[in-house]
Amino acid sequence: GENVEQHPSTLSVQEGDSAVIKCTYSDSASNYFPWYKQELGKRPQLIIDIRSNVGEKKDQRIAVTLNKTAKHFSLHITETQPEDSAVYFCAASKGTNAGKSTFGDGTTLTVKP
Amino acid sequence: NAGVTQTPKFQVLKTGQSMTLQCAQDMNHEYMSWYRQDPGMGLRLIHYSVGAGITDQGEVPNGYNVSRSTTEDFPLRLLSAAPSQTSVYFCASSYSGGTTDTQYFGPGTRLTVL
Image 1 (cartoon, rainbow over the protein chains, first blue to last red):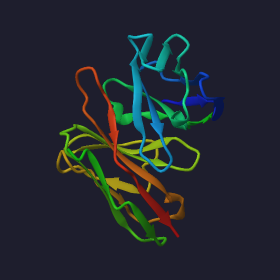
Image 2: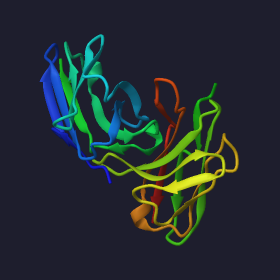
Image 3: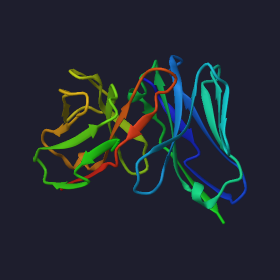
Image 4: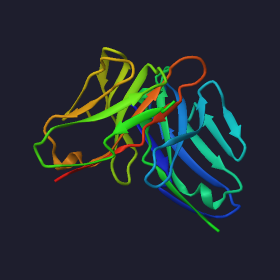
């Protein structure tokens, strides 16, 4: 089955700096790659996603890049703010069934004011 | 729309007891899934359903049963609770079609098995 590895497990940055979180996947048939943000005690919420026919997608301060050949994708957060502090998860799935996603183990991002 | 709802929010069980975690969605989504989240780990798929009457196993199905008699509801049954099932359980739903596969998660059920 699919295996998703996420790095780093923890990341601490100063407010205003950029943060990058990387994920690799094993199944070349995976073609949908969402990123979720989970605040303490809350549910995961989608912040951005990308499909395998696109190399990069951006939404304000958040961007995701995908390298299909290397089977890795990354989350980029620019101009970080304290409210960006949370756990971030990447995931991968095949076809159009996001309901059968494989998740990474998460990255705890701390943004210091 | 209420989105995805889960009950109960918290539950404490004794080893060997059984219970059902409830999940409902009002978005007419075809796909529904159950995940468990253990401390310091990502979400692991327990069971999922692609429509009423159709279910399949995920990564960690042992000790759990599901059924999907309606589009809206997808209950998860713990047959004989074990301490290893102490976790936070999230239900999710998604509509697969068009250009989006966004999964919407419920608020979670925190389960402790003593």
